[in-house]
Image 1: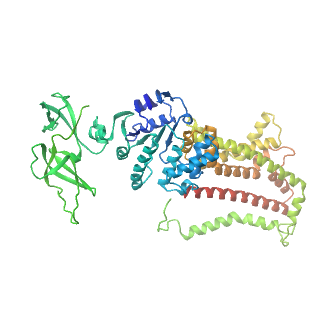
Image 2: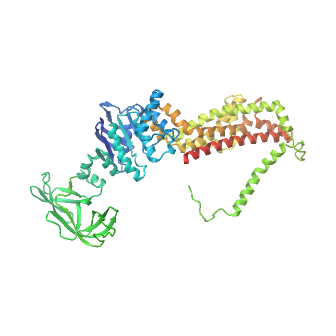
Amino acid sequence: MLELISLSKKYGNFKAVNNLNLVVKEGEFFSLLGPSGCGKTTTLRLIAGFEQPTSGKIQLNGKDITELPPFQRNINTVFQHFALFPHLSAFNNIAFGLRIKKKKENEIKQQVTEMLKFVSLEGKSDSLPNQLSGGQQQRVALARALINQPSILLLDEPLGALDEKLRDQMQVELSNLQKKVGITFIFVTHNQEEALTMADRIAVMKDGTIDHLGTPDEIYLKPSSTFTASFIGNTNLFKCVIETKTENSLMLRTENNFVFEKFDASGDNIVGKNLTISLRPEQIRLSRNNPHKNENGLKGIIKNEIFYGDMSIFWVTVLENIRVAVSMQNYVASENVSKPFQEGEEVFICWDKKSGHLITE
Amino acid sequence: MSRKNDLKFGRGKSVILLTIVGFIFLYTPIIVLIIYSFNYSRFSSTWGGWSLQWYYKLFDDSSMWLAIKNSLLIGIVSTIFATILGTMSALVIKRFVFKTKTLFTNLLFVPIVIPEIVLGILLLLLYNLIKLELGLTSIILAHITFSIPFVTLVVLNNLKNFDSTIEEVGMDLGATPWQIFWKITFPNISTGILAGALLAFTLSIEDFTITFFTSGPGATTLPLKIYSMIKFGITPEINAISTLLVLFTTIILGVMYFILNKQEKKILT
């Protein structure tokens, strides 16, 4: 178990990490997610020991490791651009940690061979890093860290240097690998898709602190802030105020005086409270007809369609100047694709009264 | 890397012609020198047929051998020290962030730009001041002084291609700073260090001006010996020893070029 207690790191007046508290459980695949400059890499470097915190503590399995240099921590890192030793073969790269520990040469040989097999790099043991492909280098970097059987493996944007196809493949490989070895992985990324697909839990970071900590589902479906809501996936945010309230429903008024109903049985909300509702593009549908009874509806004009192949995003202007994103699967049954909606068309945007997530800030 | 275009900009005939003229200008004296070292005649104005006699004569001269021995000794010792110190300062410049870094870097390169004669005089004054007797030691110290910046420059250039995150990786994998230097940093910059050392050695072997000011009795180096021979007129022996010196430095520079080139290729592929 890794505990970060009131951890801060200042560079001059800039607080890269600001009073961060975090507990990472044993065997967890944990992701630190955030835009560049949010402090995620600094946090990782603090855990690895490359940086010293300005204040706060780091505890590993109950032991304070804040003051320990990197080479005395049982933590290993996979670096962003792999950072393999260019002068050493794949075998010797992986063997490095064991050699430092002065293991016997025949023991090293056996372990490294096993590890090469584990990451499917048999036959590449004599290759120099520049003779390996991106994916192979990535696996050498992983093997080089894993062979030391660290308590925690830190990964700093390890998929960032790979092309997209390979990245998708490595996402699956990494998460299988983590399950197999059972070591705690802490994974830093700015790519929300990577975090959502691989992590057990995600900490969304902003300005050196954690904005929202939760499972991928929680973070996507129930973001605790507008920042997390808009950082993870796309969303439409509307500021509103609670106009009236019944037992299991709220009437919300937007800044443009549009009033609509939202089912909410939580009872946490009082009349007059300011809220933001987050509506994902996939929670809204387009229709030429009036909305159903259990739906809210707004008339608008389709300004743009952005075609992504499997799906399209429609930008619809409603209430004069509000742009709303609506996504729609492109179901292509035959070769003649007829687009269901045209740019410039007048449509209703409809969403279920149950849909949408309320954020109080 | 820039791509070739079809505009033929700066690739006209005049450019080629000027290049050829430049090369002729540069290499004619050297070629003449080499040819005349094989001249049988005692006077350079007349051609007396091919001969190796001046080379034989050269090797019979014991004072010449002493000069060669001195030059090699000074070259080797000064190269070792200049390489260590130059490499260390390159590492400091690359790694450390300190307020006077730019000043430090520029100060280090001053010996390259100030006239050699000035550096020679300055060193002589210094030696007088600290009462250091002129001889092999004073020459060696002088050569270390002017070689350091060259070594630093070459190593620094090599360090540009060196990704220092691999040092962090080493630390991450449990290596102590000392182990990191010898197992990671050194193997990756060793070609640069070697190239720097070869440069320092070449500079030391061929230096005249600074050596002239800092040498004492019994510490004659090869260039000083050649100079003293010229006082009695340009003999074919001078041509012969100069030819050998040219050959020697060319070989060293060739080796250096080969090493650096090989490393560059390794990085690019």
